[in-house]
Amino acid sequence: MITNMANHFFLIALLLSITPYAFAGSLRVEGGTVFTGYNSYKIPKDTGTFVELPKKNFNYYRIETEFDLSEKSVIRLVYAPLQTKYTQPLTDPVTFEGVTFNSGSELKTNFKFNSYRLGYIRNLMEGPLTLRWGLVGKVRDAHIIVSDSTSKKSKKNVGFVPLLHFDLQAQITGGLHFIFDIDGLASSQGRAVDARAELSYAFLERAQIGVLYRVLEGGADNSKLRNFSQFKYTGLSLAWVW
Image (cartoon, rainbow, N blue to C red; front, side):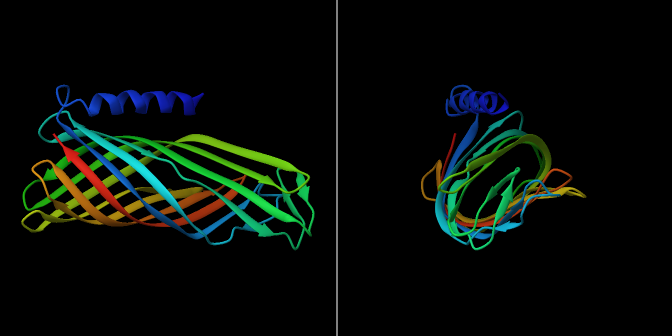
Protein backbone atom coordinates (compact mmCIF):
# COMPACT_ATOMS: atom_id res chain seq x y z
CA MET A 1 0.00 0.00 0.00
CA ILE A 2 2.82 2.39 0.92
CA THR A 3 4.57 1.62 -2.36
CA ASN A 4 1.42 2.30 -4.42
CA MET A 5 0.85 5.58 -2.60
CA ALA A 6 4.47 6.60 -3.20
CA ASN A 7 4.23 5.73 -6.89
CA HIS A 8 1.06 7.80 -7.30
CA PHE A 9 2.48 10.69 -5.33
CA PHE A 10 5.70 10.87 -7.32
CA LEU A 11 3.89 10.55 -10.64
CA ILE A 12 1.59 13.46 -9.78
CA ALA A 13 4.48 15.55 -8.46
CA LEU A 14 6.55 14.83 -11.57
CA LEU A 15 3.75 15.89 -13.88
CA LEU A 16 3.32 19.09 -11.91
CA SER A 17 7.01 19.88 -11.83
CA ILE A 18 7.51 19.54 -15.60
CA THR A 19 4.80 22.15 -16.19
CA PRO A 20 6.77 25.40 -16.37
CA TYR A 21 3.62 27.48 -15.95
CA ALA A 22 2.99 25.97 -12.51
CA PHE A 23 6.41 26.14 -10.80
CA ALA A 24 9.95 27.33 -11.40
CA GLY A 25 12.20 24.34 -11.02
CA SER A 26 14.19 21.62 -12.73
CA LEU A 27 13.97 18.05 -13.98
CA ARG A 28 17.02 15.78 -14.00
CA VAL A 29 17.32 12.29 -15.52
CA GLU A 30 20.33 10.09 -14.75
CA GLY A 31 21.41 6.72 -16.14
CA GLY A 32 24.37 4.44 -16.55
CA THR A 33 25.98 1.37 -15.00
CA VAL A 34 25.94 0.06 -11.43
CA PHE A 35 28.81 -2.04 -10.03
CA THR A 36 28.15 -4.21 -6.98
CA GLY A 37 30.78 -3.46 -4.34
CA TYR A 38 29.26 -5.89 -1.84
CA ASN A 39 25.80 -7.21 -1.06
CA SER A 40 24.98 -9.69 1.69
CA TYR A 41 22.03 -10.81 3.80
CA LYS A 42 21.18 -13.03 6.77
CA ILE A 43 17.41 -13.39 7.28
CA PRO A 44 16.34 -13.95 10.00
CA LYS A 45 19.42 -12.80 11.85
CA ASP A 46 19.34 -15.54 14.49
CA THR A 47 18.58 -18.61 12.32
CA GLY A 48 19.30 -17.57 8.72
CA THR A 49 22.44 -18.35 6.73
CA PHE A 50 24.83 -15.55 5.85
CA VAL A 51 24.83 -15.16 2.05
CA GLU A 52 27.32 -13.00 0.19
CA LEU A 53 26.11 -12.22 -3.31
CA PRO A 54 28.52 -12.22 -6.27
CA LYS A 55 29.79 -9.01 -7.84
CA LYS A 56 28.03 -7.97 -11.04
CA ASN A 57 27.23 -4.94 -13.21
CA PHE A 58 23.82 -3.79 -14.40
CA ASN A 59 22.11 -0.71 -15.80
CA TYR A 60 20.14 1.89 -13.84
CA TYR A 61 18.21 5.13 -14.10
CA ARG A 62 16.79 7.65 -11.68
CA ILE A 63 14.69 10.82 -11.85
CA GLU A 64 14.97 13.92 -9.70
CA THR A 65 12.92 17.09 -9.76
CA GLU A 66 12.87 20.31 -7.79
CA PHE A 67 10.43 23.18 -7.65
CA ASP A 68 10.93 26.47 -5.88
CA LEU A 69 9.04 27.50 -2.78
CA SER A 70 10.96 30.78 -2.54
CA GLU A 71 14.31 32.25 -3.57
CA LYS A 72 16.06 30.25 -0.84
CA SER A 73 14.09 27.02 -0.47
CA VAL A 74 12.96 24.20 -2.75
CA ILE A 75 11.07 20.93 -2.60
CA ARG A 76 13.06 18.00 -4.00
CA LEU A 77 11.66 14.68 -5.21
CA VAL A 78 13.71 11.60 -6.11
CA TYR A 79 12.68 8.33 -7.70
CA ALA A 80 15.62 5.90 -7.58
CA PRO A 81 14.76 2.32 -8.56
CA LEU A 82 17.35 -0.41 -8.08
CA GLN A 83 16.65 -4.01 -9.04
CA THR A 84 18.80 -6.91 -10.24
CA LYS A 85 19.17 -10.70 -10.12
CA TYR A 86 22.09 -12.74 -8.78
CA THR A 87 22.87 -16.40 -9.53
CA GLN A 88 25.52 -18.42 -7.72
CA PRO A 89 26.36 -22.13 -7.18
CA LEU A 90 25.13 -23.48 -3.86
CA THR A 91 27.98 -25.43 -2.25
CA ASP A 92 26.44 -25.48 1.24
CA PRO A 93 22.82 -25.46 2.44
CA VAL A 94 21.25 -21.99 2.89
CA THR A 95 18.38 -21.19 5.25
CA PHE A 96 16.33 -18.09 4.37
CA GLU A 97 13.09 -17.17 6.17
CA GLY A 98 12.71 -20.72 7.49
CA VAL A 99 13.22 -22.42 4.12
CA THR A 100 16.38 -24.49 3.51
CA PHE A 101 17.89 -24.54 0.04
CA ASN A 102 20.05 -27.64 -0.41
CA SER A 103 23.56 -27.68 -1.84
CA GLY A 104 24.22 -28.84 -5.37
CA SER A 105 21.88 -26.42 -7.16
CA GLU A 106 21.95 -22.76 -8.23
CA LEU A 107 20.76 -20.16 -5.75
CA LYS A 108 18.92 -17.26 -7.36
CA THR A 109 18.41 -13.97 -5.50
CA ASN A 110 16.15 -11.26 -6.87
CA PHE A 111 17.21 -8.06 -5.11
CA LYS A 112 15.12 -4.88 -5.14
CA PHE A 113 15.88 -1.67 -3.27
CA ASN A 114 13.71 1.15 -4.63
CA SER A 115 13.86 4.58 -3.03
CA TYR A 116 11.27 7.37 -3.02
CA ARG A 117 12.34 10.65 -1.40
CA LEU A 118 10.76 13.97 -0.53
CA GLY A 119 13.07 16.69 0.73
CA TYR A 120 13.03 20.29 1.88
CA ILE A 121 16.26 22.03 0.78
CA ARG A 122 17.44 25.44 1.98
CA ASN A 123 20.13 27.67 0.42
CA LEU A 124 23.03 28.64 2.70
CA MET A 125 25.19 30.45 0.12
CA GLU A 126 24.73 31.47 -3.51
CA GLY A 127 27.18 32.58 -6.17
CA PRO A 128 30.22 30.87 -7.77
CA LEU A 129 29.99 28.54 -4.76
CA THR A 130 26.48 27.43 -3.80
CA LEU A 131 25.82 25.54 -0.57
CA ARG A 132 22.52 23.95 0.49
CA TRP A 133 21.29 21.70 3.28
CA GLY A 134 17.97 20.04 4.06
CA LEU A 135 15.86 17.24 5.46
CA VAL A 136 14.73 14.23 3.44
CA GLY A 137 12.03 11.67 4.04
CA LYS A 138 12.76 8.39 2.29
CA VAL A 139 10.37 5.50 1.64
CA ARG A 140 12.43 2.32 1.29
CA ASP A 141 10.84 -0.43 -0.81
CA ALA A 142 13.11 -3.46 -0.38
CA HIS A 143 12.32 -7.00 -1.50
CA ILE A 144 14.54 -10.10 -1.57
CA ILE A 145 13.32 -13.27 -3.33
CA VAL A 146 15.46 -16.40 -2.93
CA SER A 147 14.84 -19.52 -5.03
CA ASP A 148 16.33 -22.66 -6.51
CA SER A 149 14.87 -25.35 -8.78
CA THR A 150 12.42 -26.58 -6.12
CA SER A 151 11.83 -23.85 -3.50
CA LYS A 152 11.12 -20.14 -3.27
CA LYS A 153 10.85 -17.66 -0.40
CA SER A 154 10.71 -13.87 -0.16
CA LYS A 155 11.15 -11.07 2.38
CA LYS A 156 9.72 -7.56 2.02
CA ASN A 157 10.95 -4.56 3.97
CA VAL A 158 9.01 -1.35 3.34
CA GLY A 159 9.52 1.55 5.69
CA PHE A 160 10.29 5.22 6.28
CA VAL A 161 13.83 6.53 6.81
CA PRO A 162 14.72 10.16 7.72
CA LEU A 163 17.90 11.51 6.09
CA LEU A 164 19.97 14.67 6.12
CA HIS A 165 20.92 16.40 2.86
CA PHE A 166 23.91 18.54 1.89
CA ASP A 167 25.06 19.72 -1.53
CA LEU A 168 27.47 22.15 -3.10
CA GLN A 169 27.98 23.48 -6.62
CA ALA A 170 31.22 25.21 -7.58
CA GLN A 171 31.70 27.06 -10.86
CA ILE A 172 34.98 25.98 -12.50
CA THR A 173 34.79 28.11 -15.62
CA GLY A 174 31.98 29.38 -17.83
CA GLY A 175 29.24 26.76 -17.92
CA LEU A 176 31.36 24.03 -16.28
CA HIS A 177 30.47 23.17 -12.68
CA PHE A 178 31.50 20.62 -10.05
CA ILE A 179 28.58 19.23 -8.02
CA PHE A 180 28.62 17.15 -4.85
CA ASP A 181 25.56 16.04 -2.92
CA ILE A 182 24.77 13.52 -0.22
CA ASP A 183 21.70 12.10 1.50
CA GLY A 184 22.63 10.14 4.59
CA LEU A 185 22.18 9.19 8.23
CA ALA A 186 23.50 6.49 10.57
CA SER A 187 22.25 4.87 13.77
CA SER A 188 23.09 1.87 15.94
CA GLN A 189 20.81 -0.35 13.83
CA GLY A 190 21.90 0.70 10.38
CA ARG A 191 22.87 3.44 7.98
CA ALA A 192 22.05 4.90 4.57
CA VAL A 193 24.37 6.98 2.37
CA ASP A 194 23.80 8.17 -1.20
CA ALA A 195 26.61 10.44 -2.44
CA ARG A 196 27.29 11.87 -5.91
CA ALA A 197 30.20 13.75 -7.52
CA GLU A 198 29.52 15.22 -10.96
CA LEU A 199 30.98 17.50 -13.60
CA SER A 200 28.12 19.36 -15.30
CA TYR A 201 28.16 21.61 -18.35
CA ALA A 202 25.46 24.07 -19.40
CA PHE A 203 25.34 23.64 -23.18
CA LEU A 204 22.11 25.55 -23.77
CA GLU A 205 20.39 28.35 -21.91
CA ARG A 206 18.30 25.90 -19.86
CA ALA A 207 19.93 22.50 -20.47
CA GLN A 208 22.81 20.82 -18.64
CA ILE A 209 24.69 17.57 -19.28
CA GLY A 210 26.93 15.83 -16.78
CA VAL A 211 29.19 12.87 -16.09
CA LEU A 212 29.05 11.44 -12.58
CA TYR A 213 30.18 8.91 -10.02
CA ARG A 214 27.80 7.84 -7.24
CA VAL A 215 28.07 5.56 -4.19
CA LEU A 216 25.04 4.03 -2.51
CA GLU A 217 25.84 2.24 0.75
CA GLY A 218 23.99 1.08 3.82
CA GLY A 219 21.79 -1.52 5.39
CA ALA A 220 20.23 -2.74 8.61
CA ASP A 221 21.38 -4.89 11.51
CA ASN A 222 18.57 -5.60 13.95
CA SER A 223 16.77 -8.49 15.64
CA LYS A 224 14.97 -9.46 12.40
CA LEU A 225 17.67 -9.29 9.73
CA ARG A 226 21.14 -8.28 8.66
CA ASN A 227 21.59 -6.83 5.17
CA PHE A 228 24.34 -4.48 3.98
CA SER A 229 25.10 -3.39 0.42
CA GLN A 230 27.37 -1.09 -1.51
CA PHE A 231 26.76 -0.05 -5.12
CA LYS A 232 29.01 2.16 -7.25
CA TYR A 233 27.48 4.09 -10.15
CA THR A 234 28.99 5.69 -13.24
CA GLY A 235 26.60 7.56 -15.47
CA LEU A 236 25.43 10.55 -17.46
CA SER A 237 22.82 13.10 -16.51
CA LEU A 238 20.62 15.48 -18.46
CA ALA A 239 18.88 18.35 -16.70
CA TRP A 240 16.35 20.95 -17.81
CA VAL A 241 15.83 24.14 -15.81
CA TRP A 242 12.88 26.51 -16.19
